[in-house]
Length: 256
Image (cartoon, rainbow, N blue to C red; front, side):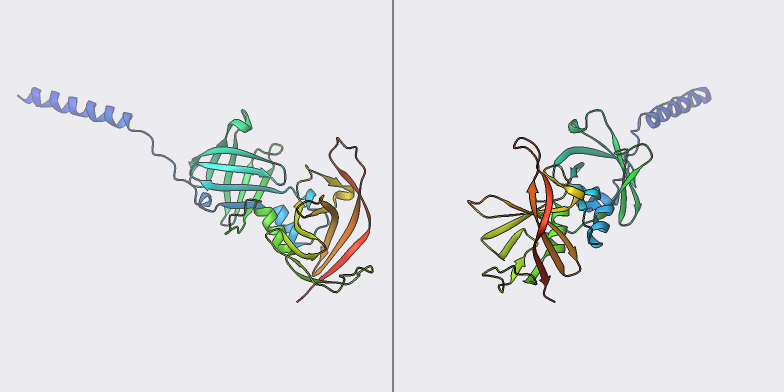
């Protein structure tokens, strides 16, 4: 009887041991930063806050976590890669996707408002991102929304250049609409440099209205002063536009 009990206990131990070996490993906890949907490169935000004359050189990128287990990597103004991710640990995810080919990248949390994309640039270099507000889920992207907020306001003209409507205020809205700038109703900022470029990396803005060709200008901002310059397209018809910056077109002073 005693031998039988010992054998039963041994069988039970073996069974329990096998069961423990067959238990699936615990799934890593999804990092908290994926609950924040919109992130923009820190370098771009810093350049914008510093009134940079060349945002195109600030490496404008976005990460959008807008649905479970997926992320969109956006090179501002040009292309987007739709990817999936899985958690490695509670501070790191691994990103892959058909649009990335065989490449696999990581995003890790550095601080509460700082995450880093690893592997996108040369080995050892990281691209840092900060959260960006986009409560309206603006389809133009968070970086474009930030530039819109940066330019938004009602302006008066300091140098009217003899225009008939020089005394009328010009209102630039964060949503890409404009009022008082001739017949133009909308504007678009070119951030990535892939659609068009200007000498010295100058900032570009396109004004448009239904039924009219887009009107490109270069712009710079110093505090509440927005300077606009004319552009001359130096490229051939079948080439990406490259503009030479010409004379000052307008100077707008934002009302306090």
